[in-house]
Length: 357
Image 1: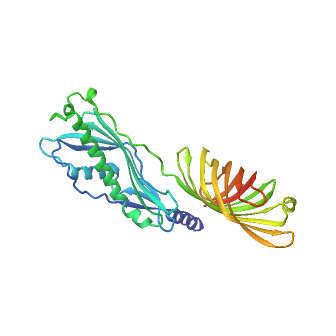
Image 2: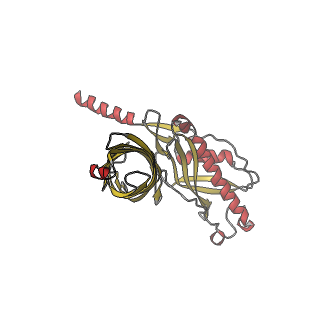
Image 3: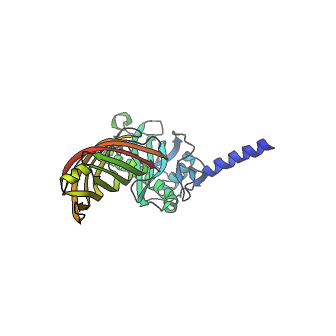
């Protein structure tokens, strides 16, 4: 009895983590007028059980699929869009890939995507055309319900695009029109060039909160910052960064300048770029403009303030070993110029520790 309870608990936990839902693809006729072909057969070459895995508002994983399978569902769709009539020639569709994705791609936006690879063949197996297409739509990051509701619309839009792409490719050269026998006049020599779109994967969005300890010849200080970025296959990733820092000039330098203490407070604004070396390891390059206030107390205990604006460059390495949740480690060199009354130019070293979520 105890074993049955344990097995049931495991099954229930899996069901919670990965529930399933079906997508009902609407059979909406499109305006494909005066076409001389219809889809006689649809073959699913990818053989994937699920179209994709997404998250709902409670962060629960949901597996998406067609209730009747991909090939059957697409066939129902093409029957409505391009019905079989007298004089139309049969063609075959082979689905190389069809998947649904959605991911946070900026600080306040999510991108939903349908990606499709589709091949067109004559009834006797001659390849006519290849098309690779992704249908993207951008939503507010919190609008997961609307994203879920509209996956079906993007699948239909992607299929419509592929069919129109094939139709337009056939119109380019009238000798490529299908004959009543179901073959091209010379399919092997007149095959149209494939259509491919540049594919940039939807990267995982990282949120990072980090604490940085900074030291140089003249100052010691710290900085806290938030960083958000989408990790994809691009060579250069541009994150969103905002930070706040505080530093104190070392006493011997301060006294040489006629002060007892000098404290600086600044917000960091600027540009950061990550170059991915391997998954989880990045070169961190930045140009920032710290803006803030310098508070000075002279040897007679008189307090004064000074507006700070400067320029800082940094070069370092950032390590994020765990993608979902974990520790962030970083180390960097920096060079700085600012409108300080004590030290205008310096360079130093920083160590960084934080979390990603």
